[in-house]
Image (tube, rainbow, N blue to C red; front, side, top):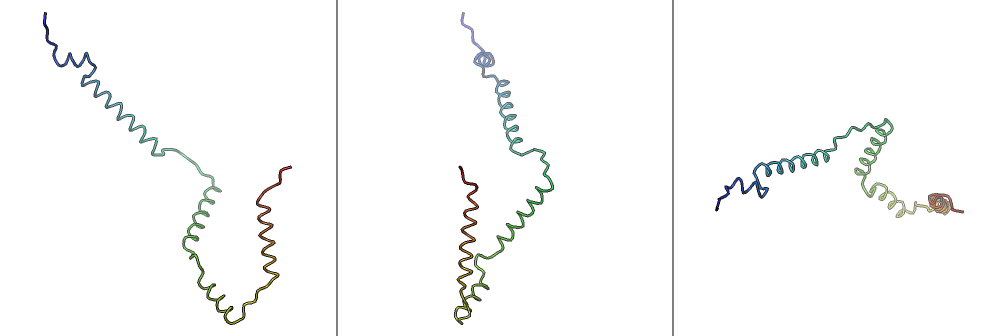
Length: 115
């Protein structure tokens, strides 16, 4: 006996029905929504007053740094003028103090020595 199977029965037998496809598409869409919502950063965070002050200070420091020129032309031109006129005097004591100050800072930044 030769019976023909209709398209809906054939799809049902192979698992390719329109309903199953729709469910799969809906599940995929739901997964995308969940991922998108997780990426939105929908979190409640409370910052302390100290934290807010630190953030404001950081923002202010960054603003100052961005708006400060790399070379302070006024200082450079003043030093050039003093050198050319012979008014610029190098203090060996100031140089020695600076070298020692930097050496102490470097040593202190290393932390406590291990025993």
